[in-house]
Length: 136
Image (cartoon, rainbow, N blue to C red):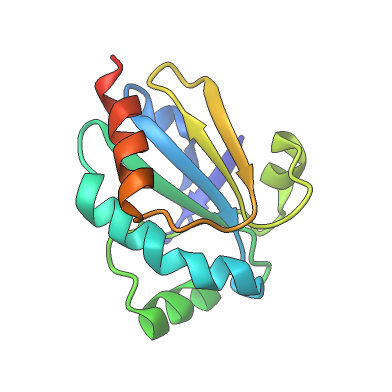
């Protein structure tokens, strides 16, 4: 499954091999996505590093400028801009709605999926993800 970074350079999830990844499929026009994005930003600020990464993958067809504008408006500073203007990732992953979030282990295997928004920086959620990071 491919996508692009802010500079338009191609990326895949293989770039995060060895990390626990929280992959969030979202769009700027999705109201629940907009609401949860700051919680993902705070989660990345707290846990992001060599063992964990929040990968926020936008499905915006308007391109990276729409995402940059949204990030600036909402104060998102800890998430990298990733975009799939074709929305092919939604089909590849079997997304039936947005937002959709997958928890992926260090070997690249999906170990959890949530359709709908969540409070990703809530203490119980942070503890749960810490447990997945600790499970090497």
